[in-house]
Image (cartoon, rainbow, N blue to C red; front, side, top):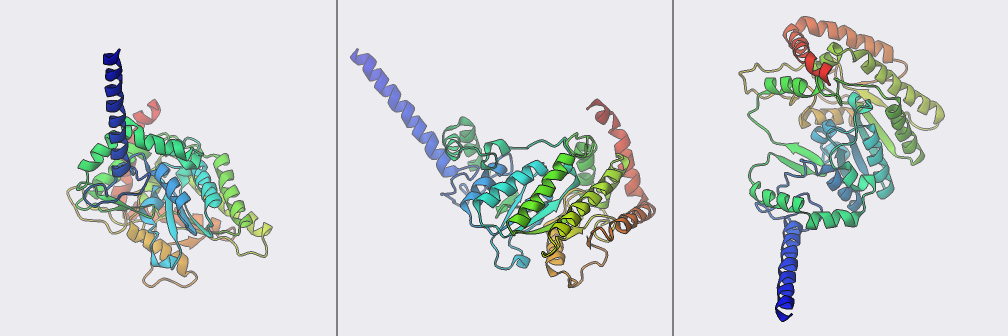
Length: 399
């Protein structure tokens, strides 16, 4: 009996000692920045697992802990390009709540959570066509985040005791000199250099937009997602929250991908629908300033930036690839929007248009005219997009 009791005591000591060791490791290393207590450069400062499935959980905690007055919403285009410390925000406390692979359902949930947990006065939403497809489901760790009402204590317990988080802690310790990304107020700051843009432009189409059912390959325009946008507009009005809206400046090749997949007409209708919702809002709120909608898409001097040849490592000024633009272009977008109606110095005259019910049809017609001109001026780009679409047709049919 004594031997058995001694064995049990030793076992319990080893068990609880191991548990304490695991908990201490996960708390200190904190691979997904759940606790944000210990931050030591070259030890646990770099957090590769934040961008690998942990971003929604982290951002829900940071928004809840913070005291932000301005929130930036949208997809990975917002995440990668809108700098929350940009001078245009002046002294505002700004948080970038952009997410990769998101949709209007998620965006609206993030907005609601932020509105209910902070005293926000301004919302800036980067609008993307693909977030209005009903094929896009919730992504990443959304259901494990506070955005989905996940209990905060269960988040802490999982972060401290789970073996999966222990694995991430151990890997984090070995990745302190290899990451090329940092997170600043939710903004994902890329530091990539020496890249092949031509390959990235091809890959974003052949590995995603031309074959992925959740992006363009299976795009299905959802009126329910459009209604969520309408509700967000109404909520901002009711709470006296300033709402700034813009359509992200995707590269012209991205619009060509829409054209060859026959969803370009829906892209145009989507813009009409956004304008209609804002026109209805203006009628319902005659004594308040109208909400502007900026359109930065099309075939202008920025979005038609030349792509280096396949054997070149020349860096593009504005784009990573056709879907994602750089912080440098995000800065231009912010400058134009915040300086309006004054013209930003050296801003391209054809980049950025405030669209409304008065000019939407002429605006869309101008883009269609520019589309034909792009085919004349950049025939090799149009031909490549069309070829890639043909070569990937069998994948779309099989999906």
